[in-house]
Image 1 (cartoon, one colour):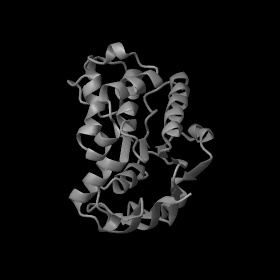
Image 2: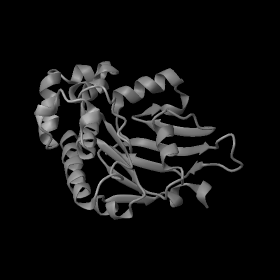
Image 3: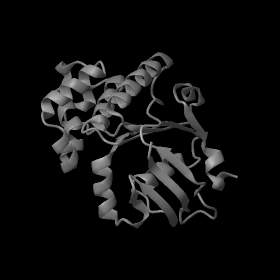
Length: 227
């Protein structure tokens, strides 16, 4: 398997802070791997993901993603790269409250020609994902703000998966769920990620979730700024 993410170095400090928030040790993630990173709240996990997504510009970095020198891309190029190659499940889901389920899921393809080309039948693919995630297609025209937390979460996962992105980023996606719902969610997420062959980078403060992964890291071990 080829490396899909190669981090030789990554250093970042918020202007108001005296010490670095990130000083990441060399890290290689192979295509198709499922990686779990455990870290306490406030340790810089989300900042790290934002750097990998091109949302935050590090002070210094040497990062290659999909054999592309990510560190040298301009901000607009990183935006396009992220839209084409990433699917993201946020902690708060970040759905557009007044858009319905179908519109929220379709947003991902709206920002990416590459994903749009991959999806030949948008309506059919949305319904397929909803069915795979045990979400009724009767909810297609329901505004996101009228969904339960569990329903919002699965819509967010469908939005991340549509267009078959190569990399799935999950940032504390189970924090609002009880233990039973958490287990069901993990099973559904893994089933879909494996079906698509996507690489999964999953970050959480909940160490119990590591049991779902073959590969896991403690963020304090890979982030030298925490030592």
